[in-house]
Amino acid sequence: MILAERMSHLGTETAFEVLAKANALAAQGRSIINLGIGQPDFPTPENVVEAGRKALADGHHGYTPANGIPQLRGAVAADIHRRYGHEVDPDLIVCVPGGKVTMAFAMLIFGEPGAEILYPDPGFPIYRSMIEFSGAKAVPIKLHESAGFAFSADEVLGQINERTRLIILNSPANPTGGVVPRSEIDALVAGLEKHPDVAIMSDEIYSCMTYEGLDHVTLLDYPSIRDRLIVLDGWSKTYAMTGWRLGWGLWPSKLAPLAAKLAVNTHSCVNAATQYAGIEALEGPQDAVASMVEAFDRRRSFIVQRLNQLPGVSCVTPLGAFYAFPNISGTGLSSGALQNRLLEEAGVAAIAGTSFGILGEGYLRFSYANSLENIEEAMDRIGAWLTDNA
Ligand code: PLP
Image (cartoon, rainbow, N blue to C red; front, side, top):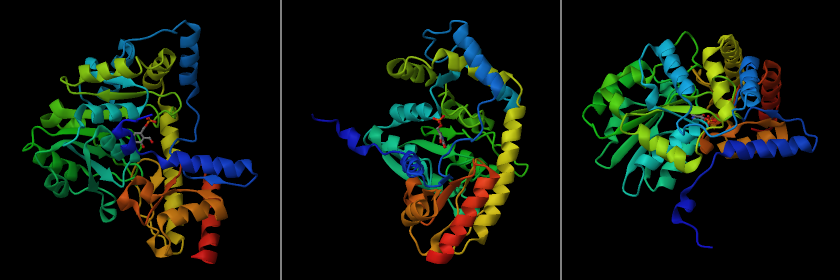
């Protein structure tokens, strides 16, 4: 067999590998606390599950329009208006099986050999993987621990050249929990006015998870870039629906038909029942979301406090998502070594910062989508292990 050259450029998300290893150890009878996986530990709200069940019982078993049923796209537009006060055309929304698909489509639309795409590092590993798969050059945007893992607008603007096609932004962020301040986004957008051919993909999948009274800053707030802005969001994190596979992209009018065409060519449509569940998630009561975010907030304060007490570890306070990204360089171990030894010897799964980019060396990602009791036990185990070994 002779494979396409591009296959050698495809990366992966090592969180899934750590999960498999943690599960294998647990199957051998080991006690493993999993702070590796990036998904809410809450079930999908019952009203949403019921809407999916009802859709199946009502006979919604067939194909739907490739970009999603009109009621679902209308519900997304209404939700955008409710949350941000912006009017958007439901026909510019393309519903897809998860946030990752909007990402993949953006890379396929813009990426090719000779093109450059900017992406955050440390960042969600699929950005770089899909950029390189498309044939484009992946250019890292450095995130600064000292700035709560925000980027510097001047640095981003300084990396743009005539080959730059797309800039990927992600706030609140995976893996750092960082939130980019509005002032930095203002400066970036002002600078982008000089680069009218550069598109922006804003991954806002954690938009509902900000803390300390911060409001999420959506790139939709900036009309000057609306005609080249792709907003990625979805149901996975907000409604604890990672396994349902449902996300949305809001595309500029030139690109929405292309995204819908890619949908026709790849998956036809999101499964129909999930789309009905998605409508109920957006239109039904939102109290389950509020209580989940409150629980994350309590765990956030707790884990950050405990991480900062560990020898050789310091952790800036994350302001969004459900991740803490402590600096572990004081332990004297590399990220990969610490990840492996904590899993094998202390029974705690966390993810090496290097899984999220070259600039992730010296960090570990902890997901606090786990109970306070488990987080406490994990911190006790890590503390004892570091005292004995580091
Ligand atoms: N974007 C970011 C930053 C993520 O962390 C994730 C999932 O972890 C996704 C997108 C993908 O979400 P989905 O599961 O909806 O494909």
